[in-house]
Length: 221
Image (cartoon, rainbow, N blue to C red; front, side, top):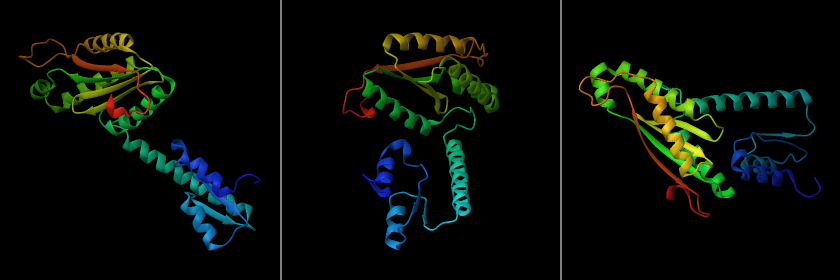
């Protein structure tokens, strides 16, 4: 390449956070061990020297693609809450950080909501953990049904808590979404445990909205 080497290209691509795990294979005439070590150190998954067999190159590419797909599948499983099928807290932290940067870059608002199922301990004590799990699943589905835009994100935060990221949403928009969330859970009409001061399962929501300042991390939200 006239203006940059393969090493420089690999390094430039890997600098982008979305490309850091992209498989990169060198096919080159540079066959010294030091050159191979340099390529692998930059993040390449394989280093093939010329002359080469096209069949071997294809086989190696196929092998790396299969490994990449397997790794992605395992990674996806690690980001899902096994009970509700929603993203888990770890996934939320990744998405929130990314959404914050997008809002910061474009000067757009972002809202984060923390949702808690009211009197859930009493529900578990009164009906048992199996019914409690079913309640969590139903509430999770109701919340996800409201947050259907591409920039909306719902995750199970832990226990009976859920967290929601609403990209490009200011305070006024957050209030409207919050009311819809409250109604969606009430409409499930899940009967509460005896001696609970409400008749059907409900949620409480805490929300915060802002326009992220430049050079400030999401921990300042």
